[in-house]
Amino acid sequence: MAQIQVKNLTFAYEGSGDDVLDNVTFNIDTDWKLGLIGRNGKGKTTLLNLFMGRYDHQGIISANTSFDYFPYPVTETDNRKNAIELIEVWKPHVEEWQVLIQMNQLGMATECLYRPFSTLSFGERTRVMLAVLFADENEFLLIDEPTNHLDSAARDIVKEYLASKKGFILVSHDRDLLDGVCDHVLVMNRATIEIQAGNFSTWWENKEKTDAFRQAENEKHLKEIGKLKSAADRSGRWAEKSEHSKIGFDPVKDHDRSISTRSYIGAKTKKMQARVKSYETRIDREIEEKEGLLRDIERVSDLKLQPLTFHKEVLIRAADLSLRYADSSQELFDGLRFRVKRGERVVLTGDNGCGKSSVLQAILDRTGDRDFAKKTQMLVSGDLEVASTMTISYVNQDTSFLSGSLRDFCRKRGLEESLFLAVLRQLDLSREQFSKDMEDYSEGQKKKVLIAASLVTPAHLYIWDEPLNYIDVFSRMQIEKLILEYEPTMLLVEHDVRFREKVATSVVKINRKKAEGIPEVR
Image 1: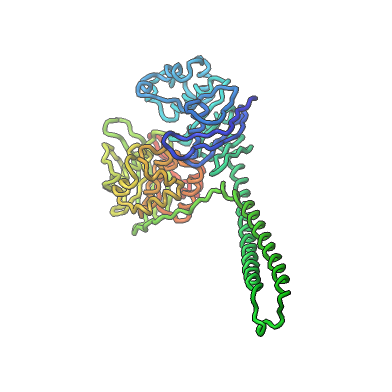
Image 2: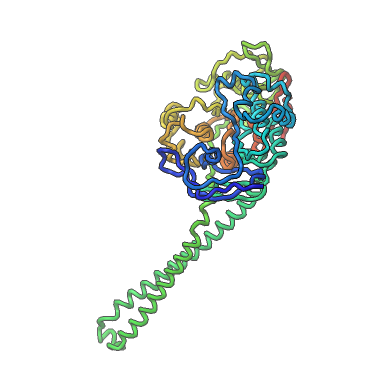
């Protein structure tokens, strides 16, 4: 067991006025299974890149081990190569047999290595990369969000595999994965970095207790400061009034005073002034003890939603539905049956490529919405009834089309700019990002743009396609709370198990060529 030591680490991107990491110090053991947790934009991926030596920085990173990073970069040329050829590109010092051992543990067929990488599914690509990553047992591994775009089955495979390993940092916003894999967490709080033994749930439970204690302590200090300020103000006013009465008096009105009284008043005034000074010292001490209590508390703002109520009870009905693209003879699935009724939140699940997003697109095409309908060459068999005249708010899983300024985005979507920006702030997008081109945003920040646009759009039905990819865990809980409070009618594709368990009123599983439409009513 060795240690990785980070001391006084400071880093900022060129041209940025803010440090991503500021004087960070911590130690970690190389046999830990360490979950890295933090808000979007806090520097998680940046920290991994610093471990890889990709950026110049101030401070010290000391390690008696080498690092490797997931995901590996894949170029257009790489996509045309067989996966086995990419082993030499990604990790040239390992042998094929070492990779095959890991693939066996991941439940993968050897033939996946002999197919062009572009023909592999998201889950297969992830597992091939992980097999190569873990083929060398003498490295400390940096794993950045391995389950994005993966279906539930693939996520379970990755979770079981990582749980059997050690010696890595895992960046993930998937609470189920963090709980099933990690034995330590490194948390990038708002102002500090902390390390705790345990998984995400253990840390979150401790955090809630700590935050409650700190808030109570903060309230106690505020009350004490208020009392001390009132006492200091009273004593100060009395001392000032007494000081003014030392010199000059009316013998008629103040017949009980004499010149000798002046020294008595002066002494008493001095005593009161000393008392004021004592109050001020105590106030400073209370303020000092109060400072820092709330700096790491996650102030999760309550989001608001403006769902509209449609006059019909059933908004969508699918019966014996099958979909096929015009250029393919293979149906994605057949026999799909489900309904979306007013007030329900229906989640579609299934393996990658089974047609979940295609179902959503077929529904959008039926609405004729000029913003979201694509009129793809999709052949629909069976019944698909979509209520007419209803307003739909849509979150696309693809963010690649986002570019330009937020102001232009609002103008194009017809959004109220001030309200839209306010929701982005509540989702913890910093004001510094408002002036940037969206093309320069991280994937998590782009997702927040789409979610904020959806939230400020009053709608009868909210259709969200994998909305939580790249979204930090705090924002996920924020969105869960919003949905449970306002109970909008929703049709979603989402693989986050915890999110699905909390918000779904029914789950419809889609299988290739066969679909089960019996909802799991909670």
